[in-house]
Image (cartoon, rainbow, N blue to C red; front, side, top):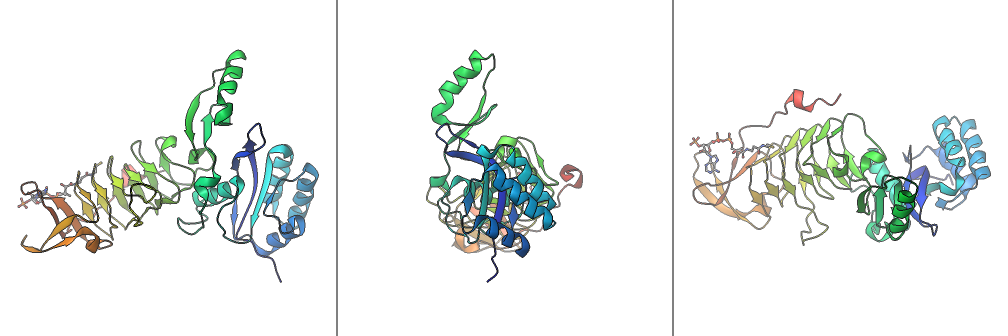
Length: 342
Ligand SMILES: CC(C)(COP(=O)(O)OP(=O)(O)OC[C@H]1O[C@@H](n2cnc3c(N)ncnc32)[C@H](O)[C@@H]1OP(=O)(O)O)[C@@H](O)C(=O)NCCC(=O)NCCS
């Protein structure tokens, strides 16, 4: 039986003083590595999925990878062999719930490298597995060790700055996908999936397992699990409802060429070429008046019945306060100059 792998990565990470993994960088993770590579890994690691190899073992692996023409992976193996205490290799034959920090970081990096799309991988157990980490000017530090590290740095004449305390690091510290602009790196978490031509402005935010097909202008929040189609524009401060907290169980998506206006929000999915008026939050249960071409009321439906529909314009009638839905005549054309990312 040939051996197959779903995911593979040679990594180098940070451990707590007690030796627990805090984070792992996989410079060139692989999804569905070639059968040749899968055989090499199996011969080297057996059925182990998370390996903490010795220097010698890594150099032996590098030799086998070189012999098979896998020069890039061989080079990474040699690099991480220089610091074996921080080296880790992950080889996953199946897509099981997460059990370790290295596995979690591999799957998050596959997303941000665009090697797996949102929802393609089993991320069950992610929050239980990921430790809360202080992300500092001196790298990842276990939160419990922070006071002593701050003091040590001060006494050595350095100032240790804490950028964040979170389970997820900034994506850009691990991977910068081609053709993207990110105005504030702290607004995009590792595990975000940003397509070519995506711009995330300062008010924009992209969570893990969520993102954009690209091109697109993101000035609002893309919650965990939400995927935004090509050519769509999320206006300043707008919101896409997530499923992690607050009771919403429905995973939301936004189709192509949609505009969610500034400070607007959606609790339903949008199809293609939809517009939501600035400031209007369309929640799933909200009653929506459907208007025909002449502006005459046809019927009133809960917004969830319109979920996924295309060519819709949602607005709040400025006189009656009712949420209205009309056909959207103006498709959103992205401004080419604004969206150039080279
Ligand atoms: C909803 C929206 C798209 C409508 O824009 P528009 O299609 O250009 O519409 P107009 O303002 O030209 O109005 C068209 C008609 O609809 C009416 N209308 C528009 N909004 C209305 C409202 N909230 N209630 C009642 N009538 C409304 C207008 O009075 C006008 O009527 P008329 O044809 O009888 O004169 C726009 O108001 C909007 O919210 N755009 C979002 C922009 C944005 O936030 N971009 C992101 C920046 S970061």
